[in-house]
Image (cartoon, rainbow, N blue to C red; front, side, top):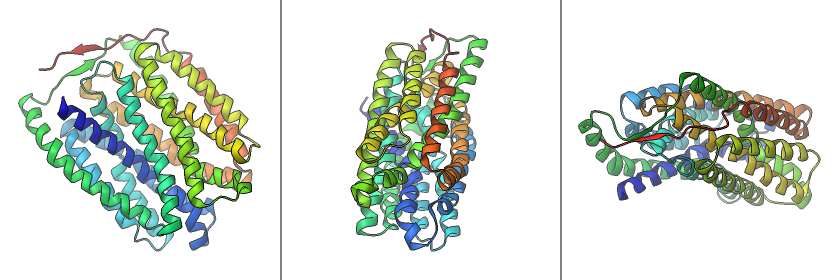
Length: 399
């Protein structure tokens, strides 16, 4: 039991770092490099695209390798590799060099979601709260990226925002390899590569229907997630300009908004373990439509509070799709199915980066919020097609 709790802690730290690394550049670009390199925000955003392409493109390979080799081994590679890539990125002196560094970060970041989430789901019947708690750690990584990066920009420069978490990640990776992977490998060999899992009781037609809706809402959710997380520091910098705030305070505002998203995940995780995932999904989609539609024109603290509200709704969606996959997919296939899901998510996220730059450059963020409101409405429409009653997974005893 103690080993299981320690493993869950490591997986949560991994989710935290995964999202932190992918969003350090968002704050660096908005608050530092526009001045230091003399490029516009829209121009800098383009150099982040290769990293997000890699984040999605390599997910399927990571999931396949984890299912065929070792999930714990792949998590070790994730911790050490992403830390090293981040440190190297801090050495960049040109936009092309930083794009290469961000690409390397994206390659290693692609490992976590198909592998780490599969490990979180492994052996559990009630997956909602476990996925939600793990999701909160990911959210806090998003929030801390803006908070810590803003602080480091003000005090020690933007390069340290890549170096400090890089060193921390490498240290955690070494500890994970020694404490978890070393124990898990002989157990997996003794069990013939199998273990306890929650196997879904689902007919083929419903399986296809649910997975199709999961993939569709995943694609649209990727646009919502990327737009709200990557652009939020810039949105708050513009909307709170009349408050005369520093980079550190902008980071703090973003932190509060992401913290609200974390609360949303916990509420939804609790709900889906006890009630219908469909009902929870409909509620969070409706809330997204409402608060995205309210955001245009808001400034100052009203904009900050509205951002907190739509982050609550946007992040509340995240655990539902993972819970649905956990219920309908056998454990032997989960990493690969999750890999496809996150490949879709992150591919859309990568494509969303140029969209954010174009929309901001031509029309401003008010237009972006109109697009997000329409996207959330499409998600709501798709969720209506989910079964009203989702069968519960049946636990398979440990070997």
